[in-house]
Image (tube, rainbow, N blue to C red):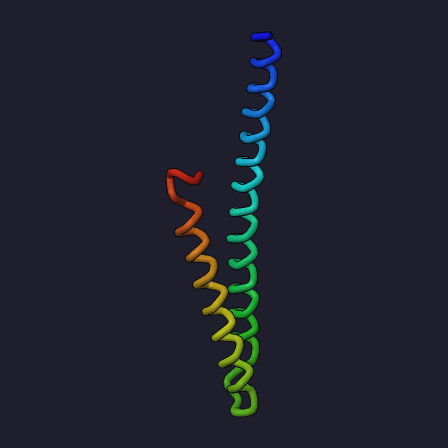
Length: 85
């Protein structure tokens, strides 16, 4: 009886450890995705040039880069807590 209880408890513990590792990985992937998108939009902003015809595109790209940068920073702030990771 004790052996069965111990095996069930160990299996439950192992499942929770695996789930925690998956959550940590997803947190890293999310932060990396937002970082990628922020850099992508920043590069688009730089590549549009400063011509009058492209000002709107540059402004839009700057706004998108800012949004994704803030999302990245928010993810890192939330996920980098010692209790979480």
